[in-house]
View 1 (cartoon, helix red, strand yellow):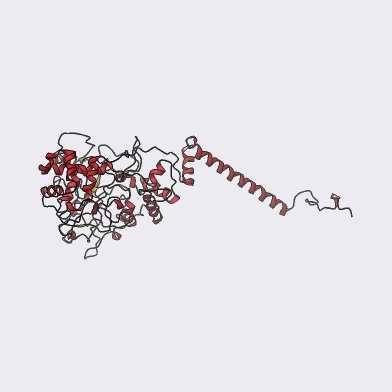
View 2 (tube, helix red, strand yellow):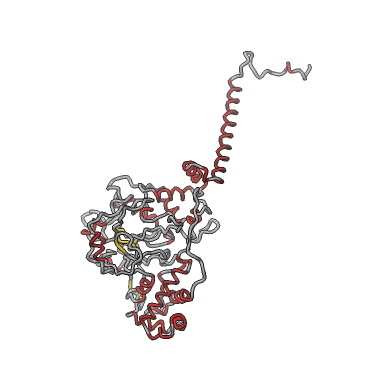
Length: 483
């Protein structure tokens, strides 16, 4: 037999000259496989090109690439505060900030409630802190973080008042604004002008205009550092190991002038907060993402999308997430005031008195706007930077993690029975931490509060988890994939 003869090999075709069914199927599968491989290769090449030349891509393609890689397709340069050695005045302020001898108990300093290891907020989950001469007096509000206050404007009402040396009559401003419609908060959109709401200032109610004024408040508060008078503070300053620094910086006569001594001491504390970069580090994963140095996970990207979605979470309506036009990093607050109607916190000792209500801008600790009842229940919107590290949220510390906070936003109007207690008759006591006559001040117009009872909530459980994942990218200290 001649094994070299092709005539002896079986023909790949049947007698009719057409391929059989099995052979045809194999051929089609080969063609499909090669086509799929070609498409995949082309897509990979296209995405690689888009990553290298994002400016040449249309917006839709940029969004696809962003979703696939987690990179920011339009990175920016952020203008952070200058990082320089602390001035002599700021170094003096640092010593004052950590000095426990300035308290009546001899055991508390500014850092006791504003821990550097906890973003200059409390190091515990207590709704309020204990103070006083014997550390047995409960406060009324959880101490806010002292971070990211370097751009905080003085308290004003209505349009931005700008820098002015003329005294401002807050009562007159409030009266003028009383009949004007409240500005709606919409994520990624400028508010309608004028935004007739309180804005700026320090503390939860904005009663201090400068870091200098804020620093003095706790020193003479009977439930905090508990000095009876400012003169008591001055006497303690004269006994410190750094008293000679006051003479060197402000002249020898300062030790004989108690009011000037206190004023310069609090100015020094303010300079420490402004100059030390730990108060405004801008070192989060989100900052790196904005500058194109980090990639967000799918969950973090989806959370950012929801955070900025005006019809969903709408967080960015109050917690601004975009850099300013001149490149300043976002502070994640509009520094305005909102009445949110958070539930009453029975863990605060003062709340055991059913007639006591903390109403923020209109009292009880701020007195100049007590008669402007349209602001009752309004509190300062805090920064969300490092919020994922906090252990007590809102002005009364009623919640202790971000899941509880997000559930409040999601369910306050749609399922209030899950947020508020019931009275003896079984009726839900909505907005139970605000007198009934001021319930109209509570925000019901901005998403997600624009839902009605029984409506589908704005977010599902996965949405909430993704928003929390994004908020964790706002923690400072992100380095090499860790924060």
